[in-house]
Image (cartoon, rainbow, N blue to C red):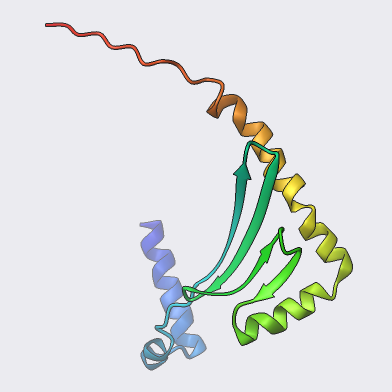
Length: 127
């Protein structure tokens, strides 16, 4: 009963504040912003590549690639943001260190239970 009362109170508050059902039709769009970080390992940790992708509404607008060493804009908006972020030298050093801080660190943590604990399968057949 508590949830119903809270939902009713919220509805009353929205009506008092002037939210109308017409406004709901205008604001029904869904927008998605996503950031994806990837670590690519070649020959263990001998060669590691860190890629961070910035995506808005299923379109990648900017990315950081540790092989390139700076942000690259994939759209006109992404180019503006990349220029701004690339101009901050302290922020860029932090991004470049992500290979060690994020990728190599997590690789060392995960190898103990991903690679070492492999057990050969045992099969038993019973009638």
